[in-house]
Length: 115
Length: 112
View 1 (cartoon, rainbow over the protein chains, first blue to last red):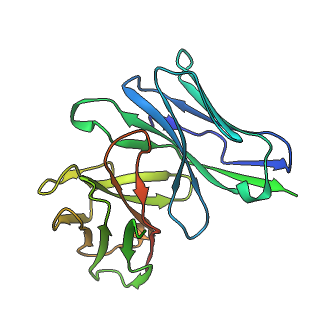
View 2 (tube, rainbow over the protein chains, first blue to last red):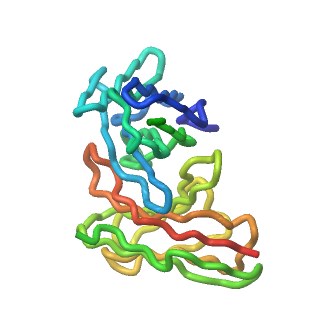
């Protein structure tokens, strides 16, 4: 029972264009959604997050959109740069109960930005 | 700015051997986690410790044990390694908040 899903294993875009990474979730008991970026041979690093009461959060070239009715979030990178090439994980944080604070991760999407 | 430190970075084991993966954090975080990463499976939680003195099972705990030695250290033990435990293991710590976890750089384990 995968509660957080990234249905696209990979995405390839041209430098300067927009990258859109998608994530779906099935559980409404999440209070934050996060995106992590992972380079080879390194641990994942925090990129951007959004509260469940918001629908958009922007940080420089990165914007996360949350559509609660569709249980869908997306990460937009504009403009994409070759250094953005990495694996991107979306994650959802449990809002309460014994699972409070725990993150559930999606499968990851490999982003390749071509010069 | 060490953050989360994992040792070793690489390890090859024979089936049936045992080993302990070490993790230490210097951010005074209460919660610590062990994840494994496998192709197409994302990051799956093995065990976690919400605070010093407590540990709980995650999504894939079979074949593993953990010890929260003190607030800084959280170790993961494989008592009898199996090829299915070939994976990259990540330790993480957290103090809650909108930034989620801080991860270590990982241990790449191969069981032959």
